[in-house]
Length: 243
Length: 67
Image (cartoon, rainbow over all chains, first blue to last red; front, side, top):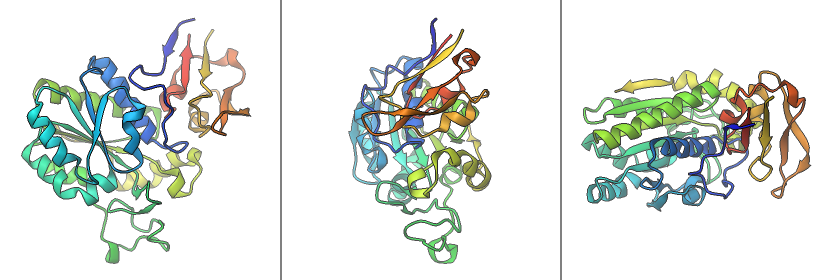
């Protein structure tokens, strides 16, 4: 018997610190598989955000570094401009990318900086205990919207991918989901395309991955794919927005 | 003859693989790993077709598929 699917060699021997059923782990796995397929696992640099993925460098075999909360786009700009030949992924969450660091994210996208942003959108601030984020759905219960998010008070949903797709500079903008095997394969293809664009022609690419947060959604991990299909993806439709 | 091997070191027992198996061969096992998670196990191994759906779905890359 030969193995037809095995753990990526770009993943380290450490078990991830993400909660059971969290699709952050799926995203990390896909990045590792893609880097192996493209043969760039020795060159790739990944930027760990503040948030649940802060220990990202421990789970992967790539070089990694961090930035203050929300500022990977600013730090990544400096890194990429001084090392234009090194492939760079900014791995960010929705609180990091779409809230605290939205200024850095949008300006870097508008300048067309040569890195790939992979944004994990689980609609809450995960690490700090499930507070409402700008991506939280209307009516969604979180620790800071205990009766459901009221859009009049807290603002409507920010759809970052649509905003970035409206700029001229980005080469590839897409939103994918991680809730079914079919969507996971599409997400993997999107990550691969984004990295190929970065390496072959240069330029900014943005991949938003819809993810679950079973702990803060207070949901059994087994129920999260159904919830994502029926509720989350109605608000955040998947598909390529640009490129 | 196909089978899947679930690595108890990485499996967190989330159960995302249970629903995607077309034959429903995966379930929570009766053993617990070092982290305290009751990890998944495969039953009726002979029915496995090595479709890889469970391994693609597994967030923690705990599943190796053999064919």
